[in-house]
Length: 249
Image (tube, rainbow, N blue to C red; front, side, top):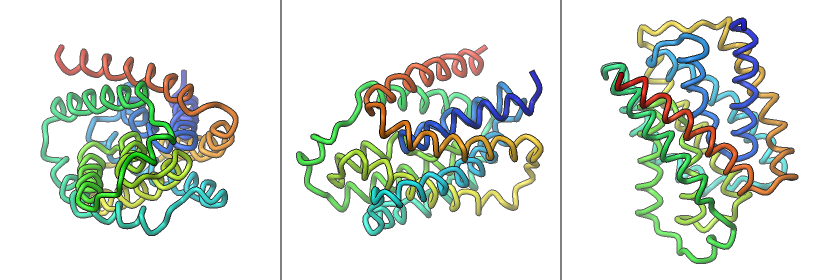
């Protein structure tokens, strides 16, 4: 199968995840770039940030039109992660490739666990907003974005529900604001790194992801969130297992 077709298929899946769940797409983008399209881990994390930034902006626009974005709270949450994201992005290029792969496998497994457990709107009313916890969660997500090239939406959604008391729809929409801000901060630190990207692959990947994000937004309105989360959780567990086996052999 040609690289173009693989990029289009992978991009569509990544966009679908981001549009429907507000996260999870970037956790699929990195392994797709490495194992399907032949990128190095360092190039894959940078390429993933480009893909996730553009796709998240598209999905953010769609959710904003539906009134699902809490701009002030989301901006404050994202602001806490900007510096950690930039610092982690600068450090990522100095880490061994195997270390990045192992760390990513762990994050993918964590994402799958979060999705299997699910987060329901009922959780929103059981937690008071705690500024220090919100800042800590935002900083942690920023560092994760910078280091591994993932947007962190799979962690941002439950954090926005449990820490800031958001309902699921608002958490999904607002998480896209957080993802976009963190990804841009990390990309800014990587811009001077000597990592070349194959734009003949990245371009089609982004185009398919953008279209997939719109489909994901429509899918989220028709299919229950827990069901979507379980499907993506199975995929992520398979990805985590494969990457872990590859890193240790």
